Amino acid sequence: MPTLDRRTPPHLITLVLATATGAVSMNVFLPSMPGMARYFDTEYAVVQLAVSLYLMATAVLQIFIGPASDRYGRRPVMIACFWIFIAGTVAAIFAPTIEALLAARMLQAFSAAGMVLARAVVRDTVGPAESASRLGYVIMAMSLAPMVGPLIGGLLDETFGWQSTFLLTLVFGTVALAFVYLDLGETNAQKSESFTAQFKAYPELLSSRRFWGYTLTAAFSSGGFFAFVGGGPYVATEMLHLSPSGYGLYFGIISCGYLVGNFISGRYSIRIGINRMMLFGNLISTAGLVLSLGLFAAGFNHPLSLFGPIFFGGIGNGMVMPNSNAGIVSVRPALAGSASGLGGAMQIGGGAVLAVVASALLGPDTGPYPLMYVMLISSLAAIASTLFVMAVARSVGRAQ
Image (cartoon, rainbow, N blue to C red; front, side, top):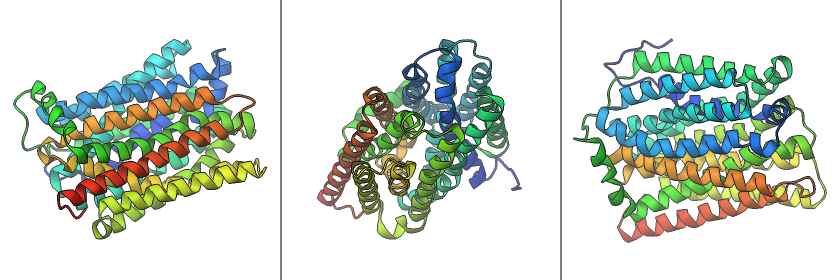
């Protein structure tokens, strides 16, 4: 147990817990979605809104969380957001209707403060390359949440019902809030003069080609994963006939890949550079998706045909995200919070759209192909975005 002291930079475990809260909230209930549709007597597409509305709310909130932290500080904004998240989680546990549950999920989206402000806190204290390395280790550690979350959620769902998955989320979020309160001091040494002044910084960020390159790379790379989050449970349960716990077990394969990718980022980003790490990661992801499509086309309709190759998608995503996010907050270091919020909003918003598209295209007779094609197109777009930012970097003489 580390010594918690707000006078020193936050411990890695504090940043991990803060960041992982959103991942737990996103992933732990996924195996319950088909059962929740039966519980509320509604269509799966309606329950899937618990994913897409959560992502959309996360995107909108990030636009405000970043500037608020630049104005008022990282610490008070994160603590306030975590209290709202806890209130939303309690509401989800006792939701009497699907509409009430969806509203509670939007309150849970305030957990976005964990990832947004963890990025800004890291950038407050270290340089760009070291930011990518440290974020790699943070995300590597917090990737245990999506690795074991769906498995635990599936087991809880089968044993106690879907409400138990939200109870687990409540416990996790409460522990994270305690660590943040006790260990996170204020790292923003240059607070802006007004809240609205930070929004005036958005045009400066949006005029940066490098900001667009890093943001689009992150958006398309994470978009493939969010498409899988939206459509994967349907493919796994309705087409591949997995139980909730079975889905959670196989989902761990992807999370293991994500863990490996983040370890690679933490180990080699400083040496290789963030741009080349993004390119290598996107190429690995694309190769995995092509392999999965080939296996299904050859008639191998087995869960491993879906989850096995996407292990490489997890590796690629783990390599891309720490480096693209380090790039986003390094374009204008003085605007790290705003850049983190705006960039995060754009990538999560894109992911929400892809999650809806993937779910809408899937049906009893489609097979897994609509989901796989959406993910493949997103991965190819991420490669193009990375090549763009590399070309911009060369034109301005940046070695990254």
